[in-house]
Image (cartoon, rainbow, N blue to C red):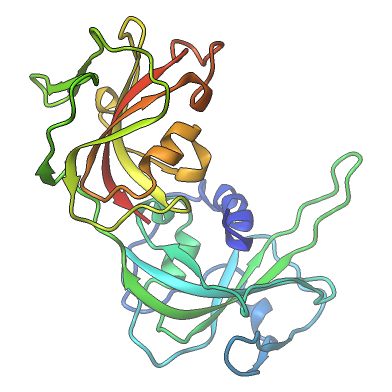
Amino acid sequence: MRRLLAILLPGLLLLTACGGSPAAPEPTSQSAGETAKLDSLKLTENGDKKAPGIDFTKPLEVAEPTVKVIAEGDGDRVKANQIAEISILAMNGKDGATLEDTFAKDPEPLELNDELKTGSAVIYNAFVGSKVGSQLALAIPGKAAAEGAQAQPTQLLVIKVLSVKDAPKVLDKPEGDVVTPPAGLPTVKDGDKGIPEISVDGVTAPTALVSQDLIKGKGPAVKETDTLTVNYVGVALVGGKKFDSSFDRGKTASFPLTGVIKGWTQGLAGKTVGSRVLLVIPKDLAYGDAGQGDAKGDLVFVVDILGVK
């Protein structure tokens, strides 16, 4: 589970997503919002793995998401579709109290992809074009008090760009060595449109999870903590009825491996990017007898692992 960034970013995307099409990023970082309210902000460096000292005029209140480079680094410029590794110090804009400090922890990855560009041009355009070593201030508007709840003050985030790296490549289809599975498993063939078709004729109920490579990819191994990009199709073992398919929707799926059924978590961890994997999942590692819709009892999936992050 992501830390502070994952908590704050979704709310900020809601605030900024309705602001129209994002501007094309300029060669340098773009400030946005009520930037004059950040003019008083001063940083004092405290060394590696330590958050800087922060001084600013209080209370800080903004009515729109506001971002500004406070100290420019001297490293490489951050490019679109890269991943910026960042540390965050979050403070209460009213009194300066620290809400969270990730400087002493592992960096947070921020992927500067089209999803972020569409959801929040403010954040995207601030990071794309900034330099490694830069420190950005991001002020997030507070919320008025709802019935039975307290008002939330403006939050101030000071974010340091520690490093940058290229985002992992996402494949269009599995790539690797074809593997011949043992007898007795469901059989898989590609249909006319290249979509895997699964036959469960004569297959008996599994006594344990089966995770069988059909194509052995040559990319990095998947960890349980990873987020995967996949194509997949799933059928019930009894009757062979298809209940879900990203292939049929024409769009890959991305998800954290810790957020799916146990049969996927256990069956895909350790597999490699580029692989096509056949999963035969006992019901106790899926949705049980009650199921979810037609996904009941023992299940069979074919999963193409196209990317990992």
